[in-house]
Image 1: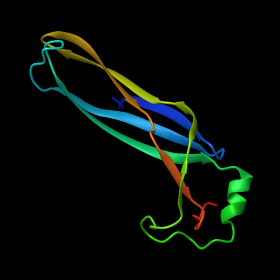
Image 2: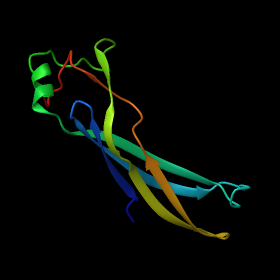
Image 3: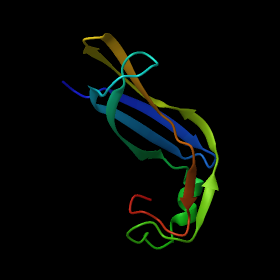
Length: 122
């Protein structure tokens, strides 16, 4: 059985589009809750990847050096999130207290870029 997957997309103020992925790996009952009788321990993983970068942004970094290993300390600019479709993954769990739907919603809350360096893909 495959893990429930949620896919999202984020468009940044410079036109870059980022993909966001969330996977529910495991759900276990983890004790009593006064809000519905049960708590769940939900294990998730997530990731991001660049879907597209506008040509004008690629032009900014075309002659820059490759980024060093690890994030550099200098050169970061905060970007606004222009549009967002959150990544939502949903699964069902059956326990003695009944059947429950577990929903994980992942959203991006901040974004930045560094035009002092380029990556091998740009």
